[in-house]
Length: 364
Ligand SMILES: NC(=O)C1=CN([C@@H]2O[C@H](COP(=O)(O)OP(=O)(O)OC[C@H]3O[C@@H](n4cnc5c(N)ncnc54)[C@H](O)[C@@H]3O)[C@@H](O)[C@H]2O)C=CC1
Ligand SMILES: CC(C)CC(=O)C(=O)O
Ligand SMILES: [Mg+2]
Image 1 (cartoon, protein in one colour):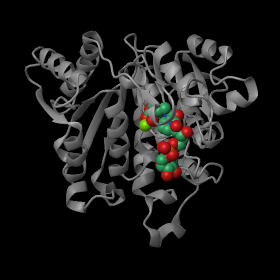
Image 2: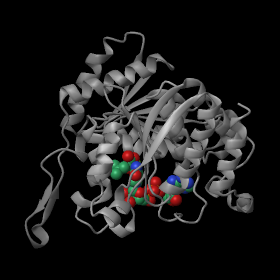
Image 3: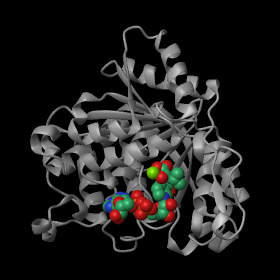
């Protein structure tokens, strides 16, 4: 029996609510497919600030270093919004974890199954047109990490600045990830940039073109970010892999989540060169619904499935979870944000959806 150690960082807001359901699902598939997951839970984010005095306590980082994979919930919320940026959960924990483990490759898959096209806010003829997008987002560089950043001056002359910076090596490695991913999918990479105004995007385009020569069977196109976000709503079926910098991928992936129906559906994998990964929903801590028991657990459960697939090589168990989730959604067992206003009375709770997915795991 294989054994794997998992660092579980549930975090803030809806994080612990949806994490509970993901751990239940993992427990069922580990019995079914005969492997053992040893979980250790660690404080992170705002909760860790409140209980340990910092967003990423040393014990949490050490626990992640010792684990085979990290399963992450979400962090942040209004309570910690007034802290200096460097102490806030987002920078002090999430960005720090990404950079500490060099998790440069962020995979965010968004698919509209034909049977679930009615969940999309897009017109049916658009939603039904083979929407299956993988956002490959660069995660450890760009404007979120570039130095210098700061604020200086006084009064109306006060000015704040961030630095968007990319090296050739950073662009090259994420571009390779995108081309390799496309070679296992529909053989198309759309590189998203703003090369008509940004110097970093000019370099991005140049290096992506260079990498493309190693993948002659993959179609490459370039789109400016403003056009790309528009095209995603007009005709998302045209895309296969969307290769994005850190900032553009952050924006594009929220849009991808929503065209499938909800922020609560989109999982993600953040992986380094050695295959070590952190797995987390693409969305945040959703303070507007936290504590109400109505958050959609699907993105967290599918993130657990991505962990089994990408870091632990437990493909059958991952397939089992994906199929159970698909059946649950197809059977109309849905949290409220997926339902139109006149059907909200049919909304299921986080726990209900978790229960239904669990019941399907033994059958798929
Ligand atoms: N990975 C992480 O930990 C992330 C953390 N954040 C942080 O989360 C906090 C809230 O950020 P927002 O901008 O409001 O983005 P958000 O993604 O938390 O919420 C945006 C909207 O999506 C809905 N939503 C998100 N996940 C959902 C789910 N599972 N089920 C149903 N509805 C869901 C929310 O209710 C809200 O209406 C902020 O502090 C932000 O910095 C934001 C994004 C990622
Ligand atoms: C703190 C943010 C960069 C997190 C986020 O929005 C994301 O990873 O999508
Ligand atoms: Mg985001």
